[in-house]
Image (cartoon, rainbow, N blue to C red):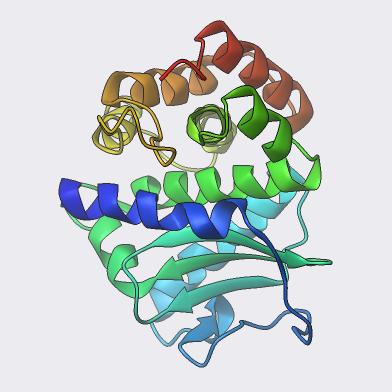
Length: 226
């Protein structure tokens, strides 16, 4: 499971960072014949949980997603921005069931979707380019900032869902990697664990305050230094 999850996050970086020029994508649609909108998904319980999560993510990060889609091929979850104004979170079906099954649960899955929602916030507020530049072209600053914001989202959600902070923090620990010299390095296991936990513990009541605190955190951690 850990290896699969780690490979997922590495694969996601293309979708996260690229602002693609691709015409003809209509609002509230998925982009591929291998995708379908969450509200069309046949598994009723899963559909209802994910639709509720979509609403929470859009509300917290002040997003208006054009797509929130199940994808039937890759074992991934990612945010994608298609210029000029198409934004979507894509969730691989295998990844969905992996992350919502023991030892994880639906809160674990939602925390990953919140991480992708944080990338949507970063794109909307043009934070990706500055975080990417400040880390020398590496994605680590971008990813740790999104981890921090995901933690803040899960704290905000704790009034609605039963949160197990140790389990969620453990999940982000498993997402870390040791490929320090690669541009796709997302952060070591302790760094990802701490970014999420510090975001969860951050005394922020709104997404903009949380984002500013997250920027201060990642820069304070010298996120661009490998």
